[in-house]
Length: 70
Image 1 (cartoon, rainbow, N blue to C red):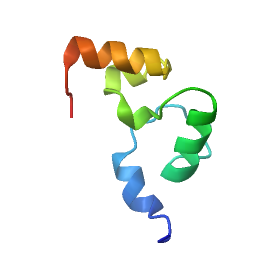
Image 2: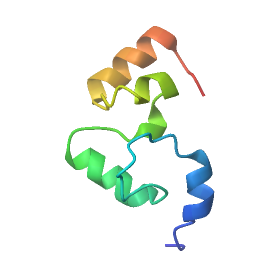
Image 3: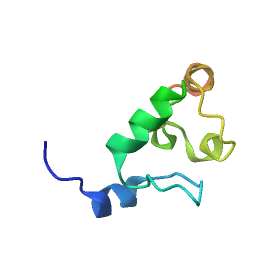
Image 4: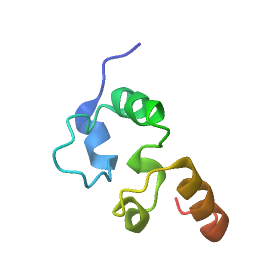
């Protein structure tokens, strides 16, 4: 697996949770959230991400209401 490109990842990371130690390290972020039954911030539109509701249910609901946002 290639080295983590944290600087590149940080330019795309929309996570607003400031004490997060996983910012820019997508593989760690994904595994962390998946273990908690959640999805990472980058899969949510900015306004939805700010609610910190990263549940799969919220992702599905948002996608159904808005369609694609990226």
